Image (cartoon, rainbow, N blue to C red; front, side, top):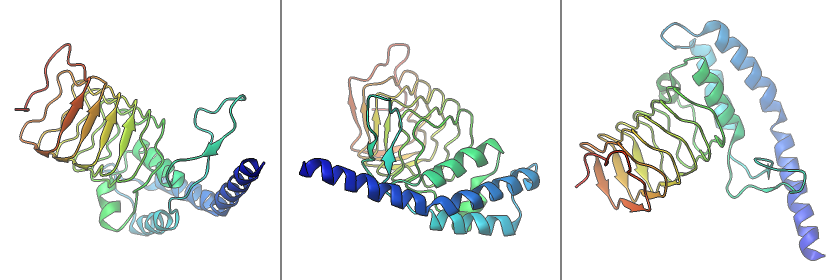
Length: 231
């Protein structure tokens, strides 16, 4: 009985926290409408709009909420395992589809750490220069995406697909790729520390000129071609 009561309290707390973020939704949609109308051919946004995005991402702090990801009628939602910001994740998905360049946003202070990107479809998106440390990219679709100069510290990617994805010059520390499809992925010139690859496929991937310390591989498939650039 006590466990059931605690569970209900947890759910009520999570719902209350989520409701507090309702105001962010209105501002986010307004920002995205303006971005769609004002993004330049080079992927740049007006300075005033950049400022609004910086403020929104700073306010949309990560929090623990009820997890409906993959939920079925037979399974009650549970609290997520770590604080995440769904608002930051939604902004990344929407802005990347508009071909907005993130470098200018990051330079002005936009914060995209701890983003909830679970199941996000980001194929061929340009996510270069983002700091995604602490984010969750489980089951994300990253085929053909560009993640140059990104930070992926303390990130676990479970069952993500990243065929031919460009991770050039990426910074990764305590990062786990768990059963990910990484065939043809390019980690060249990256800074990789304590990065673990569990299962999945690394056929034809490249680690040329990468700085790495503490790389580990467990039951990784390389059936079609061995990774290059490794000792």
